Image (tube, rainbow, N blue to C red; front, side):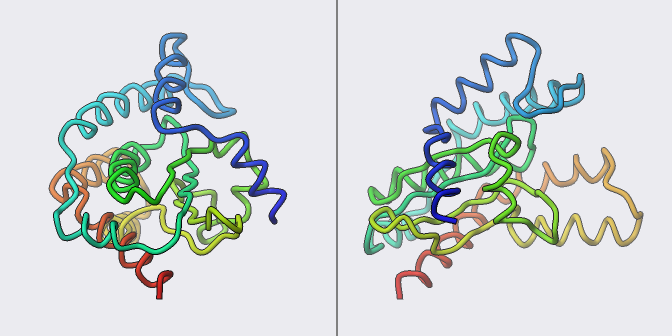
Length: 201
């Protein structure tokens, strides 16, 4: 496991480098990942716009800033992502700002399809759902915990829709984006900070 983590860290990108990677691929009409299609490129382009907006508008509450500053130790948040993933686009700007506010967390982003062995360690119900925030102790390199692929409220929204209609279609994808819009990153902040505080006990 340690070799797999070390390899994923070696292949990972800081936030701005990841953003540039996605942007550069879009200029070639491509998305990240092994699979290429017009749909995936379209989603990557939408996500680019979302992330540009969220980078400017997302805020960390004063209470959460204090909690982050009180964390003991130093950490790496290694996030598994792809440019076409709508949930990742909503969540990465939040975790980036949280990492900066803490002063104790380094954010790195690793691409799912290029790091299959690492992804297999963090499956959700046997599926390669992303994003996943993998929390690593910076000193020992050991994995302390993980969070993702969505906040609880967003997960429930998807699960309830799937139970009722049996599919994940454009309607629920739109509803999910609206959920994120109204939540303003609060659930993600609270859930990840609760986990970090638990790991600090």
